[in-house]
Image (cartoon, rainbow over all chains, first blue to last red; front, side, top):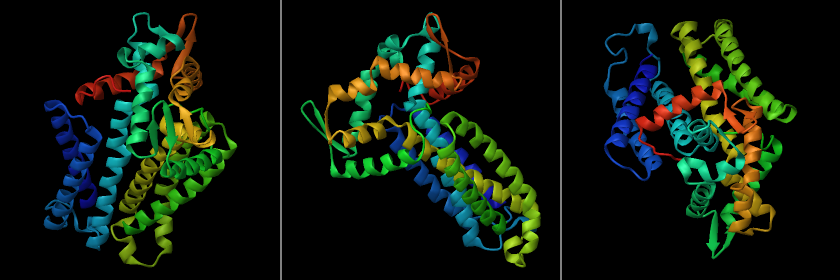
Length: 180
Length: 172
């Protein structure tokens, strides 16, 4: 039980620290900052796990895991999954979710409705879809998956490997119908 | 407790294999519905069968803490694996960056920026996205275009709160 309690407490601490930093400072690379907070809190989690008593002074003996390494592994797993599957996903959706942004733009428009043509310019408080796609292209270029040569975008060998992998995965599943 | 975690991994492996069959045999919308039902069913079955399965193992080391704690560990393990798996699925299936790479790959490796923009930031692209969102119940078509549904209003409210809390700006 100690594992669940510590993972939850440190996870909550991560959210609180991230929220405080986001509210006080204007951060450009928020995802990378989140990752650094995650790592710092992870160190704290390990230290807390090793330094605190197994029963946390309040739990029953039957709730103590018979192996400390296994307990630490489980605790780390809960915390890591909570971050990568929870906090980081919520951040990504809130900050980059395409469909979510479209929903917000439609609901905040004067008439409450929007045509596809209107959305191309109204997207993200009037920044437009070209701006959105430029951000994606910048991300691809920044990751070294493609390179820009004037008006041309050329895929790199690294990008080609990813493209083959993703194409085969997409080929296995369904495509295009799920919006995010 | 340790047995519960191992049982959770096993249950997720079974769930994942069933998912692979469903991904190929159902439409994406149907798949999402069955995905949610599958998770709930898996959690219930996992909890309900932990005591029985624990009884089959003779190890007190694995089963220490009793079946209730084992069930909790099992459910948590399953849920953690699930929340790690789903974002990966969505990235593969819906990411524009992934689609861009695949399009480049299929078109010989090089494209003009305007060709990519025509595909991913055009009116036709939005129309296609709106149609998908309508099928998923997030939008409804009106005489003037598309409007949000009550279902999506709740999502909008939640994320507007998060955006405001973290001062994320327009984003997108």
